[in-house]
Image 1: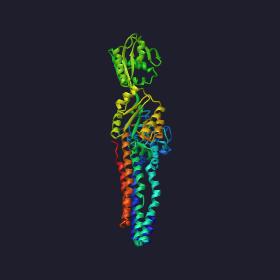
Image 2: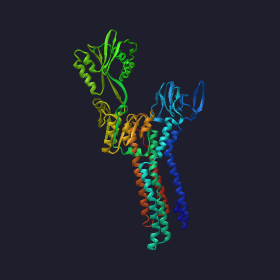
Image 3: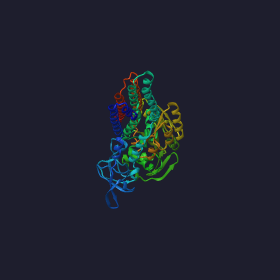
Image 4: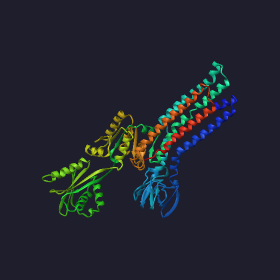
Length: 561
């Protein structure tokens, strides 16, 4: 541009030189405005958290700036006020709108010992919160920092454009010099006319549109994702996600809730089902078994007075179950194998078939009774997330070729869950290193593979995949650190949106690069008949810059539906 303006002045085209300067300035201003608009989502994140908070120290209440708040301070959050710092609720009950951090539209109930985040909005109750992090370590501060880093990082297509521009700019200068010099030297044409054409070629060749084509799309997409509770940690991950062909899912805590729950309670040969549940819960209350908590939860829901039951001679039968004497009668709760050994004739055939049926559904079955009879069955399973099935269906409709469930569970449970959720493939009984090997095999077959896990025990597999996606980034630092993409709300439903946004970003980047180069080529072809003017050149350059910028901003319109 500078050479073109000096050249225009040199050949006496002062008016056109001035026009080039004015239009170029307008073009630059519009470019800056567009990039600022793309970055607005980060600015809005920065303004989310309040700058001061009401703190109680000792018996005194005072308003303190967030920079002066110390870990351990008690923060008082009134209804309708925003929470200024991350912390743990020590008093009160309320619903908190966490949309700014997690993208969840529905407020989340918070009571004592629950975690709250800076920048979230307290609804109707008064909360007292013990501050657990400094202002620079809060979840919102981390998100802002990571998103800013991600937006500044060069994506592969941006790196390609920068490399291309390195060779392209000198090449255009040579072409412009050739246009200005060759016709007058070899064909006796007018020097004034062809120097003018050369300057116009120089202006039209300016790679403004090409250079901005990728960053505006990357910045916009990452900002839009952050606003919807998806943290994408760089342009490279955005582009990789757009090209994903297969997605592997960890089962526990990803497709399922990761918390065992009672799915079936079947009392047999007993008049009062609640009485049997009370006996089972009373026995399980003394147990260390991981499934005991599910039975106690069920008993609490049914208001069973299991804590009042007196148990004599309680003992644990390693690997099989528990037993104890209640009101002079010995009761057992444990695996079907325990009852096969304890009962003289074993478990009756009709009950055996019920047990098999429940086990085939992927449930763990516990039997309750005495040495003479089976009194009831309790089936416990890790519950599916409500939206797992819908998410897998959406991914298949988005032409993801393979969805694979990876689990350390036995094949029976894996098959039952896999069938319920609708994955196209599953692998059971895997150790963490087996998951890693399987991801490597998948990459060999499908090239680009995403892995979705909880960011802790799946770290090796997440690292080996093209894109590692962690669940629940808002609560765990590990998820934020290890993954390429974090679903902040622990919501699998954000995955199809992320795929859609990444694909759209990839499409727009390709459109922008193709258009930027195409318009240059067309304008440069106007040199041959000598029709290219500085006016056309600057409008071609400025117009192309505007079009690619506006095209990139379309990514703000991709919604999470």
